[in-house]
Image (tube, rainbow, N blue to C red; front, side, top):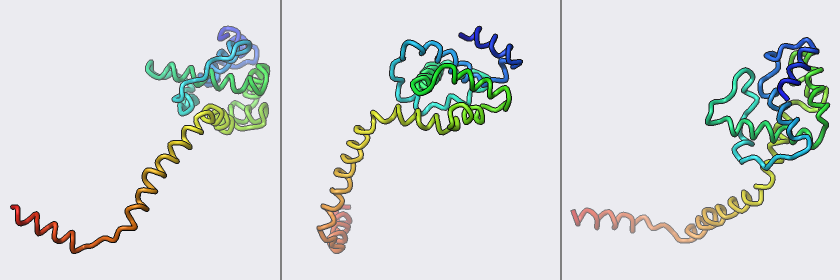
Length: 169
């Protein structure tokens, strides 16, 4: 997929180095995802900013998350648009020399809003769990606090405790 993509860039008089590295991988992963959808990415991929890798790959420890995020983002785009639209972004990029206006022209949304929507689709299945945790914490912390507020605080008893402590010493 990379070789064909490089040839396509050359036919558009574009140097492959002008295109952000992460978009090279979106094209390649999108090509792989055309007929087979990939697995659900690990949760970390939703929080990984793959767009910061314009010229270099991430460190080895982060590469699996990088590819998972890119593959999932490519799958998100292909579920809503066609592979040809991914290529049309390059056509628009050759005119603008900026990826964000190219995304707006092709998809009608900025890159950042598409990434936000993609992240929401990844995080949405976790929302019942999150609601459960928040409810549990509310019941544990908030309700317990109200329970203890109904008992009056007697400052004299605190003073007596200090006296008792001083007698022992």
